[in-house]
Length: 298
Ligand code: FAD
View 1: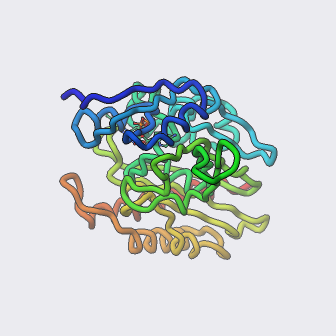
View 2: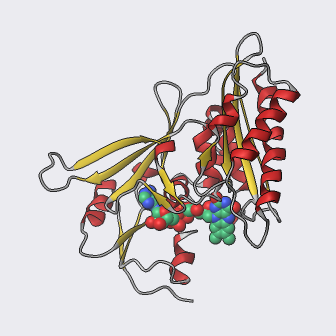
């Protein structure tokens, strides 16, 4: 199928993109890698009247180290860069570990971090992984009537960003500009794993975990998040909390994994029923917690 016709704006700067989004006379959508949006247009699941192409905006394509040692990713950083850039592998190895699970190389060459987060698909890997890492998003828009300056920006913790499937805190005139990943600290280990019917398919279920151990090997912080474990990319706080204050023994990890499966809310579909998805979540949670704890040990 061909998409419905639309007006096309190739923005060269962030301000040009924000200006196009601020003009509400036409329904406007940003175009990033196009790997979700273009199929949606072709299937007529979306019919925006104007697309603002972000691919020419150099400011959105940067990977930078922040002053505190964290990582700032421009929205247009490609999945492929997560896989191959050494700064990302050093600062946020969980992103490099996860990227090869996303679709196929051709899609990873075009698809972007910002597009994946903005799309808010509960089946996508990056939103879940970024939740585990405690990421924040910086959102920009052009000033509205009565506001001073030309640009307004706000920062949100990612766990406040997802409202529902394909539904986020982004307003129609807003653009996700950057994603900030806090620095990893000593004693921290991370891991990701998923089960898909075929390599490159969307996962039936996936789990990301972060575990921090003190010098005595006791867990003093943990985070777990799920791919396809609920109606939004979700943090499993209750399950993670069961590990805090304890040694990550096989028994403690099994208990956290069981809590994670019980408190998840996976939806059944033609590929897997709810019980099977919960089973996958339990097995994967146990696996990634064990791996993350082993990596956290000195
Ligand atoms: P686009 O498709 O360009 O945009 C997606 C949506 O986000 C649109 O609504 C757009 O307007 C909005 N948007 C984009 N950028 C911004 C921004 N900066 N600010 C505000 N809104 C923005 N993904 C996975 O996670 N896992 C998979 O296994 C997987 N498998 C795939 C298999 C196939 C065959 C295909 C075609 C895609 C698959 N994807 C998968 C999706 C892929 O990862 C997409 O790249 C990603 O979901 C969206 O990124 P994008 O840059 O292509 O965004």
